[in-house]
Amino acid sequence: MRAGAGKRRQIVLGLPKGSLQEITLYLLKKAGYSVTVGSRAYIPVIDDPEIEARLIRAQEISRYVENGLLDAGITGYDWIVENRSDVVEVAELVYARQGLRPVRWVLAVPEDSPIRSVKDLQGKRIATEAVGLTRQYLQKHGVDAEVEFSWGATEVKAPELVDAIVEITETGVSLRANNLRVLDTVLESTTRIIANRRAWDDSWKRRKISNLALLMKGVLLAEARVLIKMNVPKDKLEQVISLLPAMHAPTINPLTSDNWCSIESVVEETTVREIIPRLKEAGAADIIELPLNKVVP
Image (cartoon, rainbow, N blue to C red; front, side, top):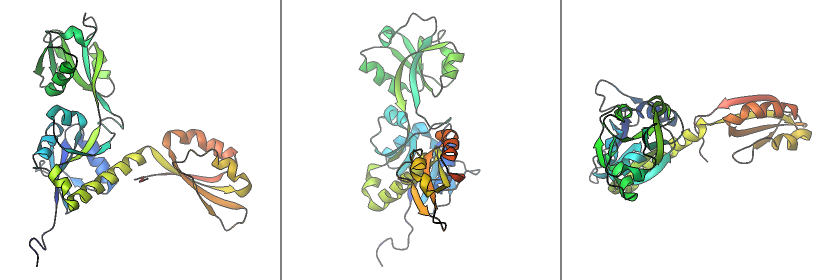
């Protein structure tokens, strides 16, 4: 028997604790992985014996992946940049706490501030949680300013404590509520699946991590799409097909009746309310809309 035979292989996967936690666990569930966070919140239980999960702050995951304490992780691109982590970026997953969209780190100042551009921050004080990211941004623009770490409530620190802030935002609502004006986008960030370089060189671990990425990307594609099925008279077929914005050509199957066929197609959910009435007018009947768990192109 070869060495290690009989011992189950595993990857150690870092899952983000905090703002990304709820939506990440939801997407994993739809991808086929049930994750339970119990009293030992640091070590959640996942129903795949080949994955050992760890619940860690997103800010730290890329460092632990880089040094090999985690084989892979799910974290934001912003924290990879912040930590200057040398990792393999396996997949981009476009989702954040409040929806399927990127987030932005923005440079903001009070509405009545005389500061109009990043150049005006020379010698000023900036508060942010992303100190490294902010310093990289200032260096790129040739600006020397004091950057201090903010433990929270960053928006309320300007103008009394600092001249400007660099803060993460999805909608900008909190910034506007605190009378802050955005000067520039420091970085646009999306969620990433990352891997340790040594783990990525291991063919079994690479396959396991790649499969996870494939399924999660399939879930995200499905989140914005639905399956439409309908019956169509053959003499109306071309007219109906012309109305379908399918990912690829729609699937067409004959029915027992010689004069009818069945069509099914995956379409963007935002278009359904407009195309269903038009499909009906074009001759389609028995139209069904179905939700999707995954779409894998």
